Image (cartoon, rainbow, N blue to C red; front, side):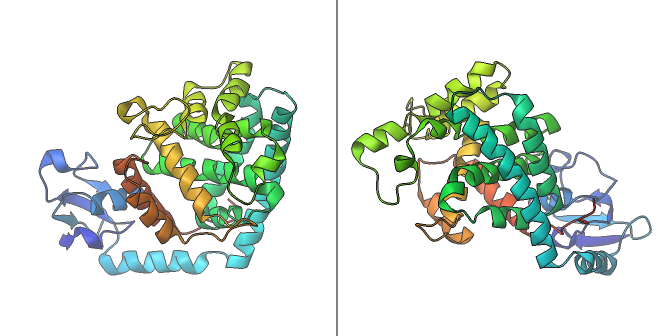
Length: 319
């Protein structure tokens, strides 16, 4: 047996005991094998003082570090990872464009159309989240709405998994991220693609897109309430200064607040023809300074989610 600091915990270790009160144990068990990065991160962020590990049943400190190093060595080269991610993104974007263009001409949008897209996005985020997110940030003028929606879907999937939501909730949130801006398909292109500031009348018009999107998604009758709420409310703010209804505080649900964070973060960290992307650290700092704009507790969780995502080792491209 070995007593180690919680900062030394690694995937592959077998924990015999945790030095903490029972109610402070974030895992809920005393003896367990660390199999996922989420478990390790949860323990490191918890109030436990130390852990007792069993090197016979699991990895020792040095062995765990070597295992992680070997996994990183086996990771595919970056260029290969980008090629695979670009191929997935091209396929997803083509389907999303068809979906959105149909909404532009009056078609309704249902779960049967969105499910294959969200499934591919979820798989891409399981394989290699950092590369998939990074390439989705590069947008031409014609791709802005499609790629933004795909990237918000991907971030929401990642955030929901970080919060250990069940698979169905993850799927529904991925769908909500994909279609949250679908009401913009009923907006004139000269407003959507305008590079300068919007006039007062243009701003008033663009602020109708949540209600338009809600109407599009409600027509089919099979969209979960989470999806409808996120579409209608993703521009609401905790301080009541958002739109369209000026909701505040607890009137805005957790899932809507998560979507708002992902939506804004993706928008300001993306490269577009008329603006340079903000570095992630600058974007987070700016968001933390905007008191009243975001749910503070969820924003801190989102920062931790991004940090954990950055440490993920890409899995085999064949999986």
